[in-house]
Length: 332
Image (tube, rainbow, N blue to C red; front, side):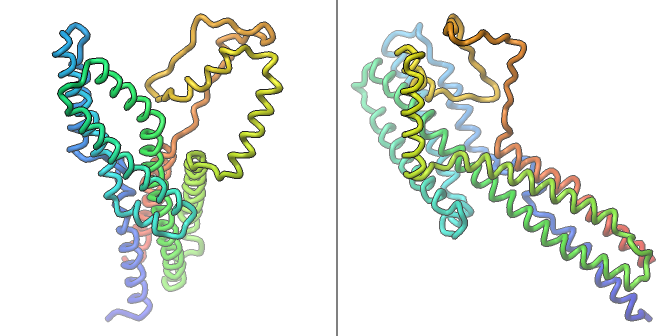
C-alpha cells in the first residue's frame, strides 16, 4: 500500500527527473550553427581551385583556371546564403515583434539580393570572350564587395541566430529551474527532510543563471554594435566627425586623411594580423614603446553564446541531476 504522502513524493520526483531530462538539443551541441557537409565540400573545392591558379600559366590556361576558381567561390557563396535563408527561425524572428525583427528583415532582403548578384556574376563569367584582365577585375570587384558587404551580413545573420538560440536556451532553463525549485521544496515538506536540504544546489543554479544572463547580455551588446544606426544617429555622428576633422586638419597631412577609406575594406581575423612598417610617427606624437602596447580582443557573439550554453550544459544541468539524485534517495 502506498501512502498519499509517499505517492506525492514519487510523482514530484518523477516530474523533477522528466524536467531535467528535457535538456534542449542545441544546449548539448558544440557547434550551434554547423554548416552542412555539402557546404564544407564546396569550401574545400573553392580553396583547391584558388590554389591551382598560377601566374606561370599561359594566358588561355590562366583564364580557365581563374574562371574555374571564381565559379567555385560563387557557388560556395550562393550556397552559404541559401543555408541561412532556409532557416525557419530567421523567418520567425523577422515576422516577430521583438527588437530585432526589423533587422532580420533587412538581413533577409540583403542576402536575397546577394544571391541575385552572384547569379548575375556567374552568368557574366560564362562569356567565352572575357580577357584575362576582365576576369581579374571580376575577381577583384567580387572580393571588395564580399569584404565590404557580404561578410558583414553573413556574420550578422549567424550572430543573430546564435544570440537568439542562447536566449531561448536561457529562458527554457529558467522555466525548468522554477518548476524544479518548487518541486524540491515540496519534497522537503512531504518527506519531512532536513530543512535546507536543497539549499546549496539551488544557490549554485541561481549563481550559474546569473552567469549565463551576463554572458547573453554581453553577446547582446556585441551583436547590437552590428545593427545599422538610425538616420538621426548617423547625422549626429557625421556632424561630430566633420568637426573633429576640421579641428585636427592642421596636424594631419593629406595622405593620412586618405588612409581610413582604404583601411575600411580590411578584414581582421583571429588568424591574421598585419602591421604597418616603414612609417614615421608625426613629430607631435610621442613614440610608444612596443612592449607597453596591449591589444585587447573583445569576445565575439559566437564565443559568448558558446560559453553561456556550456554553463547551462556543464553546470546548471549537472546541478539539476544532483537534485534529482537526492530526490530519488528520499524514496528509499
